[in-house]
Image (tube, rainbow, N blue to C red):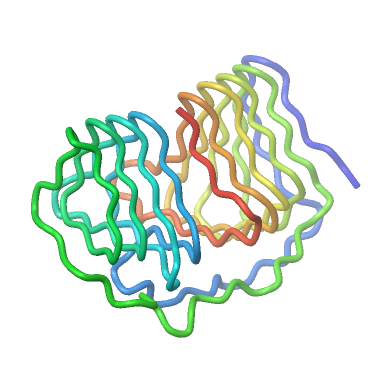
Length: 222
């Protein structure tokens, strides 16, 4: 195995020792850019600009306090729980637990489940041995390819050149940034964790980032 690191206040470009890329498999998510199979949870003060769906019968979706979903978005799940001060746009459900000061701005309806049948399958993801470790406040640019675990420490920035990536796991510290410099897709064999005050973003006019995560958790912290 190998490890790629940077020193603080430097900018480097790195590529894996072995590049084996394939075009990512995409499925029709039925107009839900953020689609999970059985359970989703969004904590307090989240700002969400995409429709969210929980696919299966019995699926659960929970929003904390003061969460905001943008105009035009749809939330759909069998069971939905909404915290105080949260504002949703359009909601499709079978069972709804709504706090008294929560708001649904554009009405509700009955959800038809499953949302996608058969559900989008994630193929076996074989990640690599090249670890990517960014120290605090450093910067690095990656080329497409197959990597191991990715760690982006506090205040560091990881830039991804256009293409397809395979990672074992992705995790950031506080105030870190993972930025797509163009059309970027990624397969993550384990968990995807974006830390407090951190960002997973694209440069202006770049396509949406496509991520297939085979682990048990996709987490965006406060």
